[in-house]
Length: 431
Ligand SMILES: Nc1nc2c(c(=O)[nH]1)N[C@H]1C(S)=C(S)[C@@H](COP(=O)(O)O)O[C@H]1N2
Ligand SMILES: [Mo]
Image (cartoon, rainbow, N blue to C red):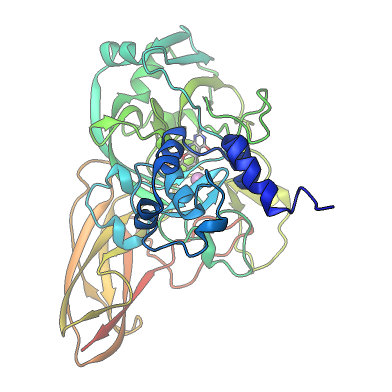
């Protein structure tokens, strides 16, 4: 007797009978039906071309099986060059050198999902409800938002609170983001403060609570994957949008289409995607990922690996000063002179200086730093550097903000792996 579960013949049968079910059982996900149809019709040569090489064992490859290399790509349709860290929920970051544009193209905007995005989104039927502690609870279509409020376009930084977690030692659980859980796309929408003012904020409201249309991983419709909120004073900031466009086009499905919050300067988790409801509360919001140790750090310095009591954690507010070197790509070659450039940002503050070091931090040279194109955008910087002779170098970048806070050499370790703003360094071989 052969075991059905391990017999390759039954695998082939499974795929030929019901490729959807087989795919789900095999990958834990269903492939995009259009893509599957295409792959089914595609000859081996076409599939080989898509994979960039032949498939030596194609004879034993079940018909209808989507190669995992293509499946990854398929999850990230409309994204370009992102590294997939997890496929359920989808989490993908952008390599630093692909973040070189002043405004991040949609295809390069990272993806951080806690649940499963809504599948069929009807833009015309989509509504946003504003309720809780407001005088006039409202339910608005996207058309209503566009007609009733002034529309603004702003470049805004979204950075995940856990960006840089991969460098933590001892390691912190969660997505192992390196550098690329940050982006600055142009968002078009209406100001949250305008909508809240129209709804009339009651005097006892102290906190927002955000609800989206994504599904909890368990499939339980009564559970939200995430619901965070912010103090009312922050919600009234002039640079927070309820956005319906990303870079002049409908928002990418993985970035929250058709409607999302964009809250620059604070953890990305406040920028609620697939936004359905904002309600105001008279307590600090206690939705999923607001309580416990989620998006919280110790309220005092701790040693790496130290156990910290729950009561010593506080909610993360602004994100710390940080910079990225986006050109050249790390590990490249250069002549004796080279142009270096990148971005710098600091939550709720302006960056006042970016410095570059070629000698492991012994001496620094000032980069040319631009103003943000609007409040909440990152700032672009560039520098011409000259190396004294051929050899191995590192270029380090250090941003300092207008409160005098500078990026540290070392990681500020905390149990959940948040807020790593240590300096970015790249390797250069000079010949
Ligand atoms: N509805 C919903 N909104 C969400 C999330 C989510 O899982 N569900 N993830 C949040 C987190 S943790 C981050 S960092 C940002 C990331 O935005 P992006 O995926 O567009 O890059 O979305 C936030 N908004
Ligand atoms: Mo995040």
